[in-house]
Amino acid sequence: MEFTSLPVFREPLCIIESEHDGTLCIKDEVLDQIALLDKKLHIVTIVGLYRTGKSYLLNRIAGVNKGFPLGSTIKAQTKGIWAWCHPHPVYTDHVLVLLDSEGLGDVEKGDSNHDFWILALAVLLSSTLVYNIIGTFSEYDLEKLSFVTEISNYIRISAKGNGEGDTNYDQFFPMFILSMRDFSLTMINEDREITPDEYLEEFCLNVQEEKTDKERRYNKTRTSIRKYFKTRKCFTFDRPGSRTVLQALKEMDYVELSKDFLEDCDKFIKYIHEECPVKMVDNGCTVNGSMLATLVRSYVEAIRNGSVPCVEDALSTMAETENKKLLESCCEIYTREMGVILKLPTPDEQTLLDAHQQCMNKAADYFLEKYIYDKDKKFQMEAKVLEVYEKYKRENEVASVECCEKALQDLNAKMLEKLQKESYCRPGGYVEYMSDLNELQEKYMRLEGLGCKKEETLLKFLDRKHAERTTIEQADIKMTEKEEEVKKERNRADAEAREKVEIERHAEKSRVEFEEKIREKDKNCKQLEENIVAEITKIKDETDKVVEERVAKEKSKKEDKLLEELEKLNKQTRYLQQNLERQEREQQQMVHQITRLKAENNQYFYERQLLSRSREENSSRCSLS
Image (cartoon, rainbow, N blue to C red; front, side, top):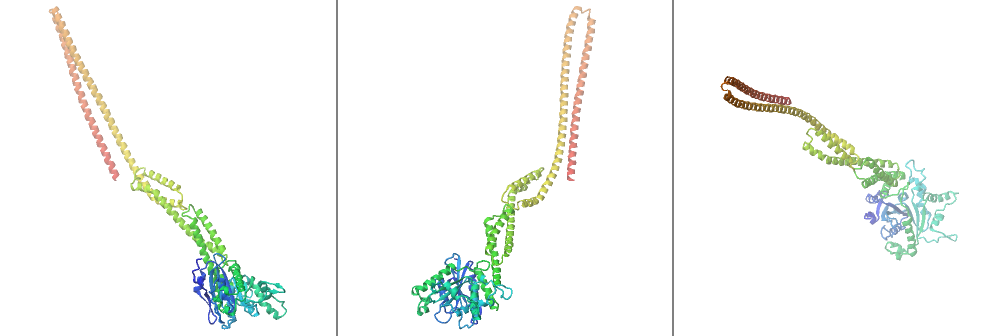
């Protein structure tokens, strides 16, 4: 057990000190050690007359010879209330707290009221109260318990009124064990052997019929004990040995003590270990070290202030303190469970809410198991846990945003690279930009594990992209318009070029056709000339032949006629020669005409070039304006 290194586990320490004037003082350094015990406590307190061996019994319960101081003289050894803690020998993870109280009836104090306050504290703090006496149960012993007849003067249950109306003391009183030391009587009643418990009920606490004041006084304390201590037990102990043995009891080995005494001790110790209950408050909640410390402080403070210790006030203070710690523990449980089952960011808010509800239920179960005296604190617990949930909710949202931003950053890298390279700064760039942006959104929405801020983060991302998108769109519009203008100008230039080419082609075709006609005409003229020459030659030859023949035959007769025919031929020759000269003149005119057409065509192209250059200069001036 992790607490066993505390000094209060090594030796008995005083937790409530009784000063010389009887004032009770708390030993905070010891009580703070007990407050660290977050375990169920079995609190066994022993009370009784001084010098009756109370400390020895506690040492035996602790399983040691030396612990609580023992005395062999008439001087009381224990002052106030001392505590000694041990791991419980039977119940795992429980602590056995042994409280040794100041002896009653100490002649040095001479104050019975002080004894009653010690008894009241013993009753309030313990789960088992052992009342230790020597010999048989006498009226003197009973007198020391007479404070129960005036219980409202020493213990109050309710904070309202003066305590006289309180009736449920039994709910807060511990188990009562009567320990009778050096008991030598034979347990026989009317020839019937009886048990110590029967002796307690039938002889020590027997109630007589009340007819006289004496009988009523006789019954008063016994009736109160029966009424307030619902669970009662009795143990008897034989003498451990001679007076010499008693004087050196703490030094004696067990084998040197009476066998009957040792057997009695074993029975008593076995019962204490196995049957003595855990300290509880009225709602069934077990008391731990912190709660015990609060109760001690509340009760002692009331006595020091001259008030009657009030159970309800003490429990309220204890509940307030413990429930505050419980709220913190519930929050720790909630936080621990959330840390186990939750991985941020959650896919959606419902997942976080389901985890919250599951962990809230565990925290609530722990609260209902541990709460003290005030069930309504559950609402405070839920409110406090809800604050932690809101923190998780904020952390979940932050984690979701971080994951979403990281995912968007990775997906946006391609677009950023294009932006840096100005890939979108061209006609049609906005269409490509929107296509990439839509592709980014589709990929982003297919991603899982981005959490509850997935859509919201995307919308914010798109909002941040709005200015960028608008800039690209406007640039695209301007560049598209400019491209359209350039395209129109290009088309116009292309049309003009095509027109020029067509004109040139047509002119070339005309020139070729004209040259073809010239060549054809030259060919025809040459052919005609050749034909005329041939014809003339032929005619001349024929004429010469005819002339020669006729000259030869009719030289004389037809000389005049031949001359006439020769004249005709000469005329024809002159005619043909004139035709040839006319054709040559026409050919020269055609050559002049072709030359003129070429000049006109060159002049036309020159004027077109001037017009095109003028339009380009006008377009440039418009763009600059």
